[in-house]
Picture 1: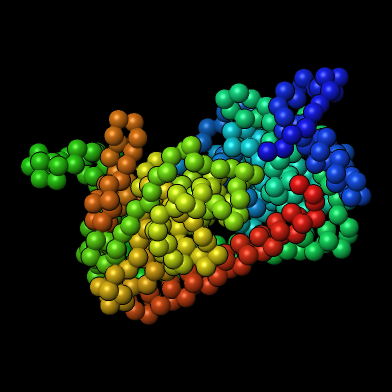
Picture 2: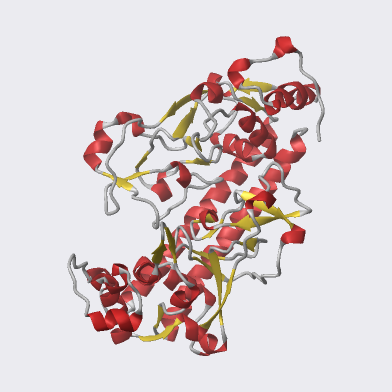
Length: 465
């Protein structure tokens, strides 16, 4: 617990009466100035705006990528095929200039889940636009900082503390553009600035290269299934015999949807296959209760463990800094190991991740852990191939949607139904090629996480907190 006092005359009512604001300005900043750390106001060296305020019609098929605030994660932009309608028409994008962003802009979520930031790169996001929930920060050429340094500082414990002190809003948190322009950025010497910039650039390059490899692996899967999986079209009407309803005891239209049924039947017709129940052992996660959650700032790295929820699956891996942490004494022995496949079965159903060698976590009850059993291994399957298949929308995605039911208002995929999803077993040579590509991709992802932690450790040592 930190105890300090503030004079009534020093109260700034426009910044809310919260201790964090005054603790930052009177304690943290003061001590760093005493250590000869210099500060700049972000608005003096950057153009800061937000995205389009009006509602632009979205679609899930094609067009220009239009981000959500939740797509901005720590250091990367997330691709969320489950809950996103990620596109807007090209005509709307060209007409509405306010949603445009530039290469190397720092994007930061300013509404809802506030404070996560990433650098925009066309190389892996493509042309994209943003709504009002995201701010875009364009660093001026003469600025004494780089976009990479800024996003590293935003991610640091020190940066988070200041950001939390500036937030407003009772129900939904908000970081106003005014407060963002007044945001204090401490500067480091040029040598350290260059080092942090290079490390941050390398970390993002690892992520971009990893995504290229995963896409190559998916192309190999598509071309070796023995049929055109994307050529199977959706029927907008279909009928079901009552006897089939009573036999399956599933009263959900998705289970009988011809698109999902026809894709699964095509897999069974053209490939050897096995159900998940025959080739995997499954262990579900645990729930500890929100009263035990700790935030990034509150966590103790020696006593708390990352708690991975369904929203913490980011670009096929677990978020390096999930939203919450829990005390070690509440962690059960889930035996989560590198190479395990994680599959979400509550809320945002069908998200898939592969655990890396850098991950230490406890998974929540909305996530299932899949590991090949002896039968799966003897069938020639690998964890990397299992991940690739389940992360493929037409196989893992359709299989999950088909078996999901809605209890009142909350969608849920029962473990028993998840076990029925069909895994195609293709040639040994193609499985080996896919395994190699995925393994290389996740080695790069591991390197990215290692670099990010190195950067964050440097930031933590540099500033007094």
